[in-house]
Length: 541
Image 1 (cartoon, helix red, strand yellow):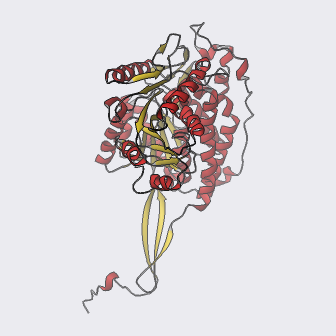
Image 2: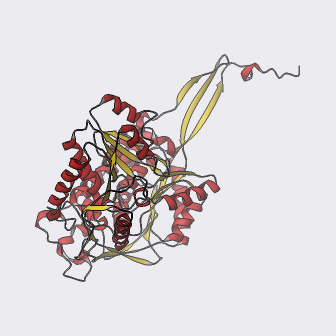
Image 3: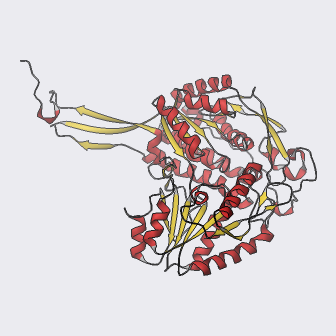
């Protein structure tokens, strides 16, 4: 196997499309993949009908699902999902692939991940456009998501040469204690629609580097991203004559439940809602498996009296509206000092007004606000706004569904609600932000921490004392605790994840790699005599 790794070949660069020249409309009822302006889909190896299971070969004998463009409501293409029997076969092959992959030296595994990153670079343009098309996020965000996968591949290559255990001093003479990190086995990744490429990438790059095989079940509403991404990875594996250390099984609830319950899947990394994550966590724990949970976030941006208001406004704009409010790190609450509240609301509403001409199809060059993902997101948006108004809230801006093809809503600012109102404490995956008036930073921290989730948080302050209070034991209880920047847009170098109902999992950088390993403590006696710890004497002679 290793000899084949030295013979590297490259695929040709795909033709790049000029985004600005395309016009995206709903004038045709045919599949978008058949239309010339969407030719980038075929550059990714996609067809009108695509198999959704990969385990060395492509197949798919389950129900067929249609992927839709949320910007027009038009069908893009279809994917034949897998069934439970195909999942069972795929898991078995993933186990066998792991048995070979774990024997490959870590730096050689890193070389394969490097090739995956390079292949993603070749296809970044069309793959990023597919992410935008299928999710609804704007062009630059789609490109940025693929860049995250590329970045974590670069990170993992370096990690392959430096991740290590340690040597621990022993209390016994001529004894040494070692600590080693070994791969778990099969890592199952269940990803959500809002980051259908990057979340898989965070998991896969690190899991592969540490010696695991990876089985992916992508979100049912973004199956084309799953298929196209897997094709890119599979090409690298095939060129190196490797077994399917990355496999894919798109499927329905039955496939997801079976994956979670299967003892052969040593770790399940799940991204999704708090309720489903709770069910996944319980089921995996029932069989004593390992789990990484990346769940919801009700993220707050605190504006201290000393804040740089201009910078805070810019942070709020992207934090609230990026990905049309559908990031797990989206700013959902802005807690503003009472001295700044009124001017901040007025200024933020002014910025929101400037965005109205920039609402449009996610692939149009001038668009900053694309659609939400599905009609269900629209319904959730409407429900939250009606509840907010019934509780005494004032819609300072927005609040309406935009009547056009696709799923468009107005970015919305709501004021006048109690900090503990039910709608404020509930995460709504839509571009709605609640602005709250607060007396001081201590009260703001209390309000930040009172929601059930604990993913991301940020404070804008020029007061060093308040900044260090914020990141200290009395401060934010979230996994991401920012100062003078947004709640969203995390980099890959740090560990990503949150506390409380966010699930406690960590992915991506720092030492998150340890979650994909099992730890071994090894005592080596090189004295030639047996000695017990703690001075215990046990000798019958």
